[in-house]
Image (tube, rainbow, N blue to C red):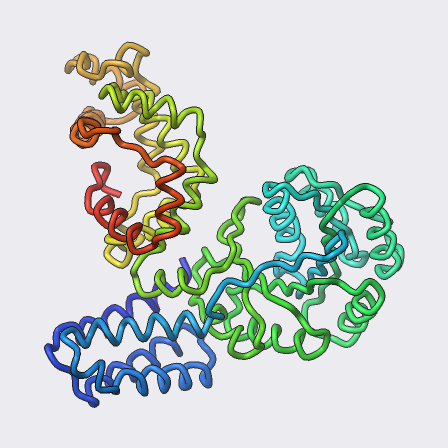
Length: 465
């Protein structure tokens, strides 16, 4: 995940501050020197790093910080606030036209993920009840039109194309088509190049001046570091962008682009790509990202992911079982599936306060679910419904059936019993273990309460993730 190295360096810097009962100006300056080095190593723009640490230092050496009972925590709070501000403050929303359709021009260099993220964004809007249309305006790259048609079919969104016709004409005709067919969002998937050049910019300028898009989104690859920021600056100066989609934020990237784009261009990051699947697109929340970088978790994004992945019918059935303490291995299989729908286990776990910042990637076993699933599938229906009947001979048969050791079966059963014990403790309380829609809304409205609740949950992890 992005920011891995940055988070670790910042955590080490703040440990020294927390250890001090009282801070001096020298302590703050030394910590900020380390923070600046950490930002530079994360590929954050030099000027941005310098201005950021100067702002934090100025606030941190104030009397209200120096004289507070927990000066180290106050400095971390300031860093959190300044990081949030650096990345834009509040989340930036997609434009909505007064008279549909809303025209969104997607631009970027070749290979940045422009076509895929056009489909991802269309899918996101479709889930919200909109009727998007994808438009193939890249008439130069081989198979570009076919690629858009393939991803369009996968997300169930229609694709408008006119072969190798002039992209400006394609865009005009697509908008007419959208008005006639009731499409309220039009995504123009424009051509890219391997680098910024005059021909590319001239074509984009012609499309912009002809169809007057309500939103121009630049798709940039976060893996390219400072090059991504330079590309954003060039596009903004030439055609004027309204926002950025940052891709591959789940990859092995240092994350500097996310911290530099807003400061260098003045334009917000609106969405981030967090995986290869077409539903791996998230609205960019500066405050939540700042919390993740500082190892504080991201409880609201965790809740949103859970809501999107939750099967309400199965959840209702599970609640009834939990209330009666009848949770069995079949239910555990269902839970594995729902957790996997939330995306990478590593990324999901790191959103939980109390866990974030304490668990490293090597401590998280992504293959655990598959092994547990194999063991459970090797059991009979009777054994899944009533694990207590599994004796040594049954364990040997189950282990042989899934190609594992008896010790693996014992581990699963022991951890399952621990989970049952936890559920029994919670289930005995009035109302049972439940995260209702009302509770989720309360947690979203009150992040502090959510942090406390999820922090307690994060402290108990029967499956060792």
